[in-house]
Amino acid sequence: MNLDNQMIDLYAVIVFLSLIASLAYMIVQTHIRKSKRVEVQRVVSVIECCGKRITRQFSKGDYVGKEVECSECGEKGKIIAIFVERIEAGKKKSL
Image 1 (cartoon, rainbow, N blue to C red):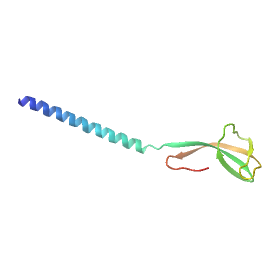
Image 2 (tube, rainbow, N blue to C red):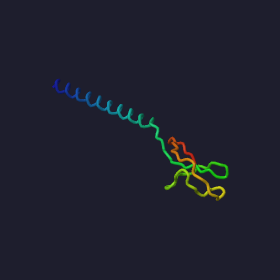
Image 3 (cartoon, one colour):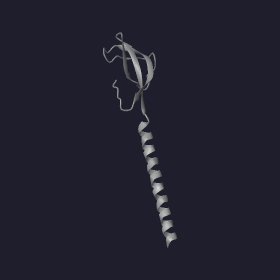
Image 4 (cartoon, one colour):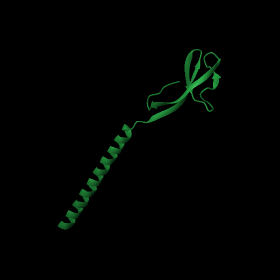
């Protein structure tokens, strides 16, 4: 009977250590996920018109040198640049 009790105690210790190891693994994985930064990318077009540079969201068909309507004066402006704007998650910029 003494041998049976020792085996049960051994199994209980093994199960307990397995639970502790699983819990430690889950805590580490949760911490790693929280610390990762997610970057959002947005493509923008820069239009030059009225002596100003206006940034707007990229539209399909935009290219450097394309003439588009200015949102401020209604005249024709020219796209002078297209680039990717990176925004960290949690920080939002408006165009």
